[in-house]
Amino acid sequence: MGIKLGFEAKLYFCAAGIGGSPTWTELKAVKDVSLNIEASEADVTTRANGGHKAVVGGLKEATIEFEMPWDSAADGFSVLRDAFLNRTAVGLAAMDGPIATAGSQGLWADCAILKFDRQEKLDEAIVVSVTAKPTYSTNAPQWKQIGA
Image: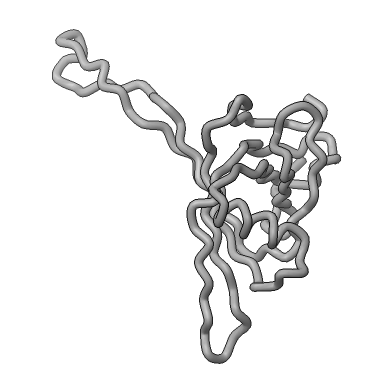
């Protein structure tokens, strides 16, 4: 598969969420996307550790952050805006390639849109910064690899 470049990655949404067989639509108007996943630490230190602290990974936390032009006609813009304003979930898939391509992988999760921040720089297009995190859902977040 080799090295992938950022422009090859794709971000998708599904207003109905990730359950069943989601119908994904690419968010083509996004700019830079960050998928941050980290685990908390649980202390498992014992006296047998020879004076060293020992930890195991605990709960994982994921955040998807991205920017897109303020364009209410762009695919997904109103879905994301409405999910933020109405506190409803939206399915997101942050993939390293097209969702229909074997080998593509990434996080699928029903997400809460926690930030929908409009930036109005004088000499640039208006841009919205979005932050999404997995939310309460009957569908647990999952790492998907297409064709696996």
